[in-house]
Each structure stands twice: as structure tokens, then as C-alpha cells.
Image 1 (cartoon, rainbow, N blue to C red):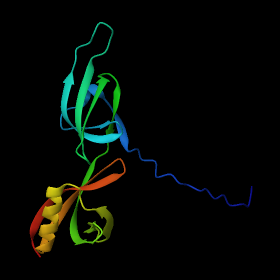
Image 2: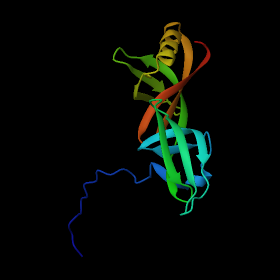
Image 3: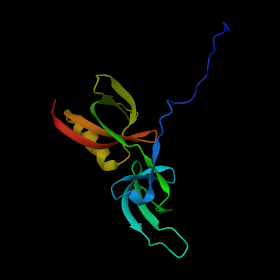
Image 4: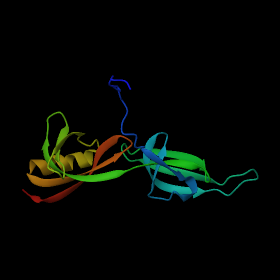
Length: 159
């Protein structure tokens, strides 16, 4: 046997997939789907009948969960579509920095400092105003396909 140690330079992640396959015919309204490599929430599904040559088709209309853009896709109902793994986690807001980043408290007591304030003006003003008033705020962070964004706010009372 060799006495040399082998060192592997790995630039890969743990290998967990960002999406999973699901048959197009089983995806319903309010579910999630990947359209044009963007995670979307399905707002409308319509299924056409089988034609002379083959497959019934599903027409999906989805709203991108991060930027709110409307995307559409048509897929044969027997084919697989990618469905993103979507997670939502609540964090307590600790601080807002001048450069637009937030400092959040995780459940195990650590801080998470790599998230920007949301781009949605309404939510942005609610967070800034509530923080300025000294309220205890809990933000919901949605993550899918390697992206994270604050998408909701809860007020849990004054400090």
C-alpha cells in the first residue's frame, strides 16, 4: 500500500439536488415548478386534450418567487418537470446595516448576516419602519435553488 496521502480539491457542494422531478400532470395550482431555470409558484394550470398525434399538454403560468415576474411553459402531461425544493424559515431581526444587509438571529442563537433587505418597496418600508419603532420583528426567509430572500414580516410585539 502507498504511504502517500491523497488530497482532493473539491469545489462541489454536498450534492443535494436543487430540484426534483415530478410528472407535469400531477402539478397543481399553488404548487411550485421551475420555468426557464427560475423557481415559480404555479398560479394557473390548464390541460389540453390529446391530439391526433399524442400527448395531452399542460400549460403552466407561474410567478417567480423571488422577483415576481410571470413566466409560462407548456409541457406534455406525461413528461417530468423540475420542482424546486422551497424552504421557508423564520428569523428574528436584530439589525439593519447602512449597506442594505440585515442581521438575523437563527434558532440556535447564531447570527445570519448574508441577506439583503427585500426589493419589494411595501415590505421594505414595513421592515424599516417597524425596526425604527423598536418593535420585535420576525422575518420569513424563502430559499430555493441557491437563492434566499425575505418575503414576509411578523410583528411579535414591542421589545
